[in-house]
Length: 97
Image (cartoon, rainbow, N blue to C red; front, side, top):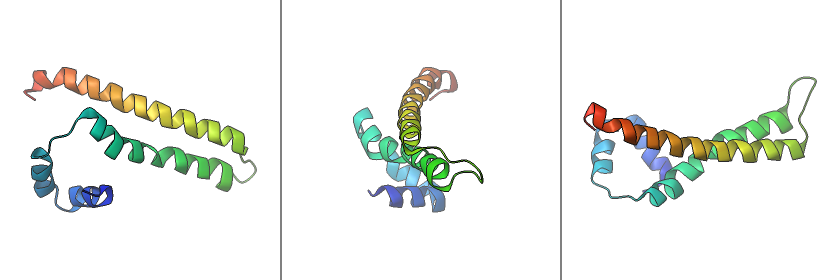
């Protein structure tokens, strides 16, 4: 399924979409490559545009610093998603998951 269609269906018809998701089989690699990697790129790119292209009224960050910011932000986002998944997996039995 297309990522945009999946996101739209989760917003418009969440109950039906979660039923579809429950029937699918995915590996961690599939989830990361199909969902996490593209979605995690949105905030760093928006931050780069905001800092380097739009900037503040009297200050803009240079392109090199903006690219470094974007790369670090992207990697930290990927790592934090993985760590949060480990935390959720550890606590899931506590809540009957």
